[in-house]
Image (tube, rainbow, N blue to C red; front, side, top):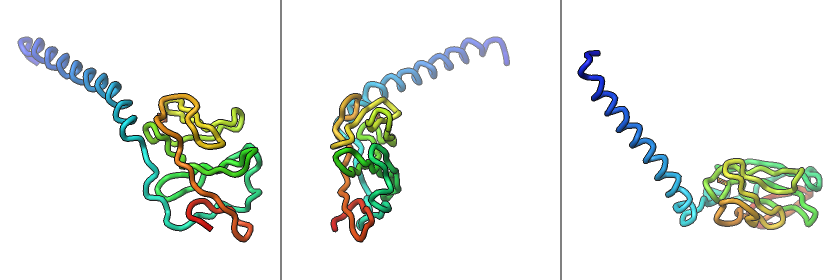
Length: 148
Ligand code: FES
Protein backbone atom coordinates (compact mmCIF):
# COMPACT_ATOMS: atom_id res chain seq x y z
CA UNK A 1 0.00 0.00 0.00
CA UNK A 2 1.47 3.43 -0.95
CA UNK A 3 2.54 5.64 1.91
CA UNK A 4 0.16 8.51 0.90
CA UNK A 5 -2.95 6.30 1.29
CA UNK A 6 -2.40 5.42 4.93
CA UNK A 7 -3.84 8.57 6.59
CA UNK A 8 -6.92 8.40 4.39
CA UNK A 9 -7.48 4.73 5.21
CA UNK A 10 -7.00 5.42 8.89
CA UNK A 11 -9.48 8.31 8.72
CA UNK A 12 -12.01 6.14 6.90
CA UNK A 13 -11.56 3.39 9.46
CA UNK A 14 -12.06 5.85 12.33
CA UNK A 15 -15.19 7.25 10.64
CA UNK A 16 -16.54 3.72 10.23
CA UNK A 17 -15.75 2.91 13.85
CA UNK A 18 -17.38 6.16 14.98
CA UNK A 19 -20.52 5.32 12.98
CA UNK A 20 -20.62 1.82 14.41
CA UNK A 21 -20.30 3.09 17.98
CA UNK A 22 -23.02 5.70 17.34
CA UNK A 23 -25.34 2.95 16.01
CA UNK A 24 -24.69 0.77 19.08
CA UNK A 25 -25.34 3.74 21.37
CA UNK A 26 -28.56 4.65 19.56
CA UNK A 27 -29.88 1.07 19.75
CA UNK A 28 -29.07 0.93 23.48
CA UNK A 29 -31.20 4.04 24.00
CA UNK A 30 -33.99 3.40 21.49
CA UNK A 31 -34.37 -0.35 22.16
CA UNK A 32 -35.95 -0.06 25.61
CA UNK A 33 -38.18 2.82 24.44
CA UNK A 34 -39.45 0.78 21.49
CA UNK A 35 -39.93 -2.28 23.73
CA UNK A 36 -42.04 -0.21 26.10
CA UNK A 37 -44.42 0.91 23.35
CA UNK A 38 -44.38 -2.33 21.34
CA UNK A 39 -43.74 -5.19 23.78
CA UNK A 40 -43.29 -8.70 22.41
CA UNK A 41 -46.62 -10.46 21.90
CA UNK A 42 -47.83 -14.01 21.91
CA UNK A 43 -48.68 -14.53 18.26
CA UNK A 44 -49.47 -17.48 16.08
CA UNK A 45 -50.92 -19.49 18.93
CA UNK A 46 -52.49 -22.84 18.04
CA UNK A 47 -56.22 -22.72 17.40
CA UNK A 48 -56.71 -26.03 19.22
CA UNK A 49 -55.71 -26.92 22.80
CA UNK A 50 -52.30 -28.57 23.11
CA UNK A 51 -51.88 -31.68 25.33
CA UNK A 52 -49.19 -31.44 28.00
CA UNK A 53 -49.49 -34.91 29.55
CA UNK A 54 -50.87 -36.44 32.70
CA UNK A 55 -51.87 -33.77 35.24
CA UNK A 56 -49.47 -35.23 37.81
CA UNK A 57 -46.54 -35.41 35.38
CA UNK A 58 -45.17 -32.12 36.73
CA UNK A 59 -44.17 -32.15 40.40
CA UNK A 60 -45.21 -29.23 42.60
CA UNK A 61 -42.50 -26.57 42.25
CA UNK A 62 -41.36 -27.91 38.89
CA UNK A 63 -42.09 -26.94 35.30
CA UNK A 64 -42.27 -28.22 31.80
CA UNK A 65 -41.67 -26.36 28.54
CA UNK A 66 -43.51 -27.45 25.43
CA UNK A 67 -43.97 -26.12 21.90
CA UNK A 68 -47.02 -23.90 21.62
CA UNK A 69 -47.33 -22.83 18.02
CA UNK A 70 -44.18 -21.01 16.93
CA UNK A 71 -43.10 -20.38 20.51
CA UNK A 72 -42.58 -22.39 23.67
CA UNK A 73 -44.99 -22.34 26.59
CA UNK A 74 -43.92 -22.72 30.20
CA UNK A 75 -46.19 -24.84 32.41
CA UNK A 76 -45.54 -24.61 36.15
CA UNK A 77 -47.10 -26.63 38.93
CA UNK A 78 -47.26 -24.01 41.68
CA UNK A 79 -48.55 -24.41 45.24
CA UNK A 80 -51.74 -22.74 43.97
CA UNK A 81 -52.11 -25.08 41.00
CA UNK A 82 -51.03 -25.39 37.39
CA UNK A 83 -50.16 -22.17 35.55
CA UNK A 84 -49.16 -21.77 31.90
CA UNK A 85 -47.52 -18.81 30.20
CA UNK A 86 -45.98 -17.92 26.93
CA UNK A 87 -42.25 -18.41 27.44
CA UNK A 88 -41.62 -15.32 25.30
CA UNK A 89 -40.33 -12.47 27.45
CA UNK A 90 -42.34 -9.28 27.03
CA UNK A 91 -39.14 -7.23 26.84
CA UNK A 92 -37.17 -8.37 23.79
CA UNK A 93 -38.72 -11.81 23.25
CA UNK A 94 -36.00 -13.96 24.80
CA UNK A 95 -37.20 -17.31 26.12
CA UNK A 96 -37.85 -17.28 29.86
CA UNK A 97 -36.93 -20.19 32.14
CA UNK A 98 -38.31 -21.57 35.39
CA UNK A 99 -35.93 -21.49 38.33
CA UNK A 100 -37.08 -24.23 40.74
CA UNK A 101 -34.65 -22.98 43.37
CA UNK A 102 -36.03 -19.44 43.55
CA UNK A 103 -39.55 -20.41 42.36
CA UNK A 104 -39.41 -17.52 39.89
CA UNK A 105 -39.63 -17.26 36.13
CA UNK A 106 -36.45 -15.64 34.89
CA UNK A 107 -35.36 -14.10 31.63
CA UNK A 108 -31.67 -14.76 31.01
CA UNK A 109 -31.24 -11.86 28.59
CA UNK A 110 -31.73 -8.79 30.80
CA UNK A 111 -32.67 -10.33 34.15
CA UNK A 112 -36.42 -9.81 34.24
CA UNK A 113 -38.22 -11.82 36.92
CA UNK A 114 -41.86 -12.90 36.78
CA UNK A 115 -44.18 -14.36 39.42
CA UNK A 116 -45.24 -17.98 39.01
CA UNK A 117 -48.77 -17.29 40.31
CA UNK A 118 -49.79 -14.71 37.69
CA UNK A 119 -46.81 -13.95 35.43
CA UNK A 120 -46.51 -10.43 36.89
CA UNK A 121 -43.24 -8.57 36.48
CA UNK A 122 -41.37 -8.61 39.79
CA UNK A 123 -38.14 -6.99 38.65
CA UNK A 124 -36.22 -6.03 35.53
CA UNK A 125 -37.02 -4.24 32.28
CA UNK A 126 -40.02 -6.28 31.07
CA UNK A 127 -42.87 -3.80 30.38
CA UNK A 128 -45.77 -6.19 31.09
CA UNK A 129 -46.58 -9.61 32.55
CA UNK A 130 -46.11 -12.82 30.62
CA UNK A 131 -49.09 -13.82 28.50
CA UNK A 132 -51.11 -16.36 30.47
CA UNK A 133 -52.43 -19.45 28.69
CA UNK A 134 -55.59 -21.21 29.85
CA UNK A 135 -55.22 -24.72 31.27
CA UNK A 136 -57.75 -27.50 31.74
CA UNK A 137 -57.89 -31.21 32.33
CA UNK A 138 -59.94 -33.48 30.12
CA UNK A 139 -59.95 -37.27 30.21
CA UNK A 140 -57.03 -37.20 32.65
CA UNK A 141 -54.87 -35.15 30.25
CA UNK A 142 -53.64 -31.61 30.98
CA UNK A 143 -54.18 -29.22 28.07
CA UNK A 144 -53.13 -25.62 27.49
CA UNK A 145 -54.90 -23.12 25.28
CA UNK A 146 -58.45 -23.09 24.00
CA UNK A 147 -61.28 -24.09 26.29
CA UNK A 148 -62.72 -27.39 27.45
S1 FES B 1 -35.65 -10.01 26.79
FE1 FES B 1 -34.93 -8.45 28.10
S2 FES B 1 -35.53 -9.08 30.04
FE2 FES B 1 -36.27 -10.62 28.76
